[in-house]
Figure 1 (tube, one colour):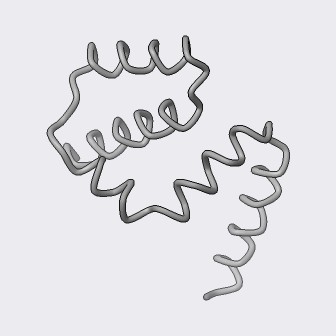
Figure 2 (figure 1 turned 180 degrees about the vertical axis):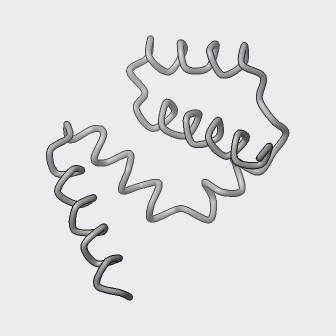
Length: 82
């Protein structure tokens, strides 16, 4: 690991520590299970309408992990397009 990578990880850790505990837990779960998260994100592209619908449902249920997974999937879909 380079010094720059270590600095980035340290900065990310500081940002995560400043977040609410539920968000910290969701991020930690996603990092610990990144292979599963990547498999979930590898499926068919979600339409903008699907993303909005699922984000709304996650928000209504205050489901931070679902919200984070949907957002990750959306980012993965956009990355695949490029």
